Image (cartoon, rainbow, N blue to C red; front, top):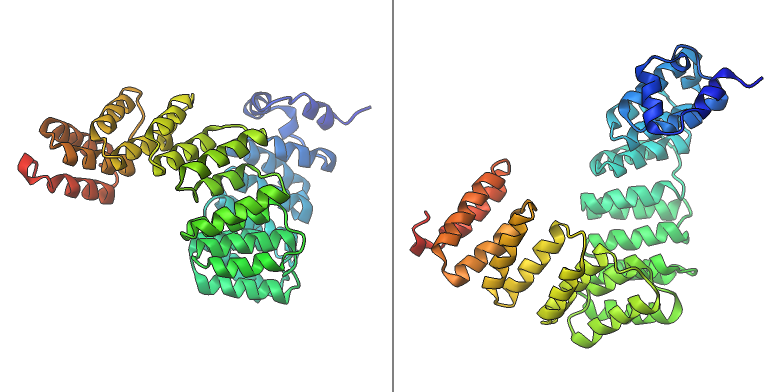
Length: 384
């Protein structure tokens, strides 16, 4: 006869039934969970409420003392955004197991807590827990967001010391790190040492060049990539950031078509920005109009494209359409629109935008002050 917990678990086909099971205090949560069902049940929890209920049942079985189950709980708490619960569990479970440390570091990184991830890695290293090829990509990503060159170099030294200098995934992460830190040439040295480069290696190198203004080098690598491997979506986005000429813009779009890549919103947004830089506002607008699910980046990019092309009236018209569509502007959009008003010397529009800025950015004092200062420069309107 099948275990009762197992039968109940199989009936939890989706999150609603799981949550209902918890809320109705079903038998599953009044009796200890067997090890055979524990992991599956943890992974089915899509809310903090459901995970806490499962966790409580696990406590009655003492499975929380098992490293495997503890690690799964930590990972699930982190995936639901509760790094505080995850870290409490992690701290209570003293272990030198690198997998446990990796899960907690990844939890911090996935939730944008990069300083905490770097600090935990430093603690890990200090306690003599040896990182592996899963640890370093997460830590290097965190270092890139922390933007601390000294820390990045130190971790790179740890990579070499632990024997992962030739590891493909670690190498790709190092390239990305040096790109974010403004050290594209250091990234190139890492790239040259990777013997089995994949499309991520090439894409990371192109991105590093693009981030640091080495657009010609980025395009050169893009051509080499296209000759050797099939470019992926990330590579295309990085290449588009390097393009400032019409011919190259058309070539990149041709690569997208040739490789049967989907013109999703991110690629369409990047293509719009690319053609705007090339002075092809009509083509940029074509991409904008073709985006069925426009996001804030789509609107902001097209408005800024009009401003850059000295078409302030078109920028303001599009901005008004954006407001009608109930898209909430951010600081970037407002700064573009303020410049458009300044170019046109429009009193009524400037007044209207001034009111919008106050209502929209009231919870962001820095953004509010920045936008109002720009409007105040329009002294002849008597706004300030």
